[in-house]
Image (tube, rainbow, N blue to C red):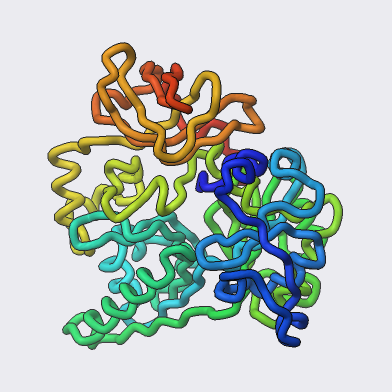
Length: 414
């Protein structure tokens, strides 16, 4: 999500309003809040963030930490790249799908090859509408052929859950569904923490007897951590080695305290955005929408060849058409001279000023010291090394199409 850019730039532009951090105990006593503050949802760690000096901002309907104390976005970003940071991502929607035909249902709901996925392995996937547009991107973890754990985006909560319910009803009334109905459990109030960075594994290993070397990228397990038995998945949204840990509501604060001791630093949304963009990862609502297909987004790889050919999933015909005709536009990475480009900046052909596309996310990269961006350009202009111009502050800036990730990923693969 490049909603953030740098904290300084955002504040100057008025794009983010930091809010007063008011503990729940004070709210319960009737303390007046600013307009709209009471309408925002809160993760189980809201008070924890307040106690740790977080500057809170509205994000995806939640009050979320942007930065903590006097530690700026760039310093937090660099700490994750060199040591370890802890992110509260409890606003994400965690769901369980269970039932006798869960595998068949999930392979109808998504284009992934889940029947062949080993238990406790995960895959990046997409939820598609009937036309093949992306409703949401998601991580699907298979626990067994009859049980799946799914994480979807907070900003798509209402759309996703309504879609799930509608498709479950349709499935369970069908002949296939009658062989073993599927049920949805939304894990309301559960915590989700992301421990990320090169020192994440050594920090977590000191808290468990479970050999984390067995947990390579994309795998998960229930891991004993200082008396807690938690679902731990190896992966994350930063490009670094790390873990995403799902936590029951009553244990979330205690686990957060356990995982946030030195050298781990609490890290907010500002650094999360710059880290994910350096890693070439999409933010739904900016880089992905229902009008964009996985083929345009460079996500054809999440749809295995056998599934493209056989179909049988929602949106299959749209995918087949996009593959046959080729995408009219493609997602690309850019490095831009001068000032950083932000969402909505126009991309032109050099000299001719022929409009090629738009930037969807852009920041100054703390790691590279260059202005990086993601966007979509007309097919034929998408090859790496192609020179284009990006309009920034009403001035054309030279830019070069660059492969993503901008910063090499460091996932633990054994």
